[in-house]
View 1 (cartoon, rainbow, N blue to C red):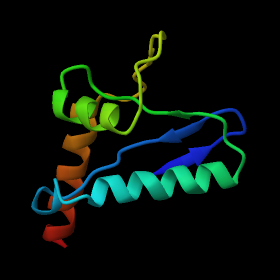
View 2: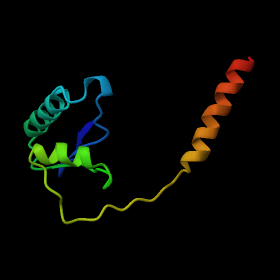
View 3: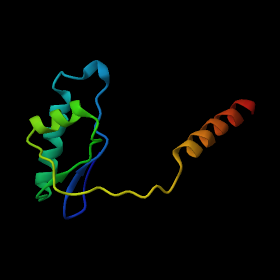
View 4: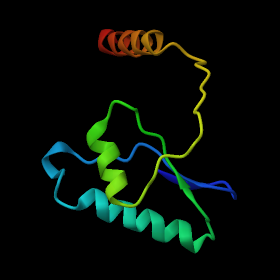
Length: 97
Protein backbone atom coordinates (compact mmCIF):
# COMPACT_ATOMS: atom_id res chain seq x y z
CA UNK A 1 0.00 0.00 0.00
CA UNK A 2 1.38 3.39 -0.95
CA UNK A 3 0.15 6.78 0.10
CA UNK A 4 0.99 10.45 -0.03
CA UNK A 5 -0.32 12.93 2.51
CA UNK A 6 1.18 16.00 0.86
CA UNK A 7 4.44 15.94 2.79
CA UNK A 8 5.90 12.43 2.53
CA UNK A 9 5.12 9.29 0.64
CA UNK A 10 4.65 6.12 2.64
CA UNK A 11 4.96 2.49 1.65
CA UNK A 12 3.31 0.07 4.05
CA UNK A 13 3.16 -3.70 4.09
CA UNK A 14 4.88 -4.47 0.82
CA UNK A 15 5.08 -8.23 0.63
CA UNK A 16 5.78 -10.83 -2.00
CA UNK A 17 4.64 -14.43 -1.70
CA UNK A 18 7.64 -16.62 -0.77
CA UNK A 19 7.33 -18.50 -4.06
CA UNK A 20 8.03 -15.26 -5.96
CA UNK A 21 10.68 -13.73 -3.69
CA UNK A 22 14.09 -13.01 -5.20
CA UNK A 23 12.62 -12.87 -8.71
CA UNK A 24 12.65 -9.08 -9.07
CA UNK A 25 8.95 -8.69 -8.38
CA UNK A 26 9.42 -6.58 -5.21
CA UNK A 27 11.85 -4.35 -7.09
CA UNK A 28 9.23 -3.83 -9.82
CA UNK A 29 6.58 -3.00 -7.21
CA UNK A 30 8.88 -0.46 -5.58
CA UNK A 31 9.76 1.07 -8.93
CA UNK A 32 6.09 1.55 -9.76
CA UNK A 33 5.36 2.97 -6.29
CA UNK A 34 8.20 5.46 -6.72
CA UNK A 35 6.94 6.42 -10.17
CA UNK A 36 3.42 7.07 -8.89
CA UNK A 37 4.67 9.10 -5.92
CA UNK A 38 6.94 11.19 -8.16
CA UNK A 39 3.96 11.96 -10.40
CA UNK A 40 2.18 13.36 -7.34
CA UNK A 41 5.15 15.60 -6.55
CA UNK A 42 6.25 13.59 -3.54
CA UNK A 43 9.73 14.68 -2.37
CA UNK A 44 10.59 11.68 -0.18
CA UNK A 45 9.44 8.14 0.57
CA UNK A 46 9.28 6.84 4.13
CA UNK A 47 8.79 3.29 5.27
CA UNK A 48 9.23 1.37 8.48
CA UNK A 49 11.04 -1.93 8.88
CA UNK A 50 11.48 -4.02 11.99
CA UNK A 51 15.08 -3.65 13.12
CA UNK A 52 15.42 -7.45 13.25
CA UNK A 53 14.45 -8.00 9.60
CA UNK A 54 17.95 -8.00 8.10
CA UNK A 55 16.97 -9.32 4.66
CA UNK A 56 14.34 -6.61 4.16
CA UNK A 57 16.74 -3.92 5.39
CA UNK A 58 19.30 -5.15 2.85
CA UNK A 59 16.66 -5.10 0.11
CA UNK A 60 15.71 -1.46 0.73
CA UNK A 61 19.37 -0.44 1.08
CA UNK A 62 20.01 -2.02 -2.33
CA UNK A 63 17.33 0.35 -3.71
CA UNK A 64 19.08 3.39 -2.23
CA UNK A 65 17.11 3.79 0.99
CA UNK A 66 19.08 4.95 4.02
CA UNK A 67 18.21 4.94 7.69
CA UNK A 68 16.80 8.27 8.87
CA UNK A 69 17.91 9.82 12.12
CA UNK A 70 14.41 9.58 13.58
CA UNK A 71 12.46 7.55 16.10
CA UNK A 72 9.21 5.80 15.43
CA UNK A 73 6.62 5.96 18.19
CA UNK A 74 3.39 4.04 18.44
CA UNK A 75 0.39 3.85 20.72
CA UNK A 76 -1.42 0.52 20.71
CA UNK A 77 -5.18 1.15 20.73
CA UNK A 78 -6.19 -2.49 20.46
CA UNK A 79 -4.70 -5.63 21.91
CA UNK A 80 -3.92 -7.89 18.95
CA UNK A 81 -4.58 -11.01 21.03
CA UNK A 82 -8.10 -9.80 21.91
CA UNK A 83 -8.78 -9.07 18.23
CA UNK A 84 -7.68 -12.59 17.22
CA UNK A 85 -9.99 -14.11 19.85
CA UNK A 86 -12.91 -12.03 18.55
CA UNK A 87 -12.25 -13.23 14.99
CA UNK A 88 -12.10 -16.87 16.09
CA UNK A 89 -15.30 -16.43 18.09
CA UNK A 90 -17.07 -14.84 15.11
CA UNK A 91 -16.06 -17.76 12.92
CA UNK A 92 -17.39 -20.23 15.48
CA UNK A 93 -20.72 -18.40 15.58
CA UNK A 94 -21.08 -18.54 11.81
CA UNK A 95 -20.40 -22.25 11.76
CA UNK A 96 -23.07 -22.81 14.40
CA UNK A 97 -25.77 -21.10 12.29
